[in-house]
Length: 133
Image (cartoon, rainbow, N blue to C red; front, side):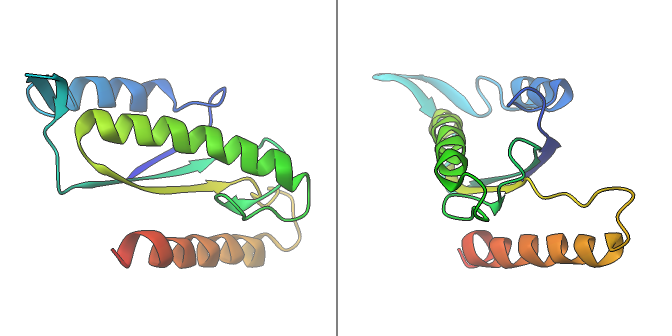
């Protein structure tokens, strides 16, 4: 599971560097007879990312909240392509992503309740797509 904030629609530099150093050739992939082959078969990958793009959703595809849902799904589909490509490179199964685009405002009078709603949404999403595997 990778967890990080959105940085210009990508992971932050420390996560990117970690992936490049740890998931390196001869650990995560190798040269094969037909090109590169992933070495981490039987493993899964899941990403949790805070964004702040539209305020339009919490979850993944189809989890928009009525604020430009079509744009939300297009945004999520772009991440699916990215995640599937990374997973294939390493030989792992991409089981999805949880995007939080509905973070409570720091000054919100309902901050604790809103944070609880975020926690509940994340737990439900993980139960559905990750822990049920």
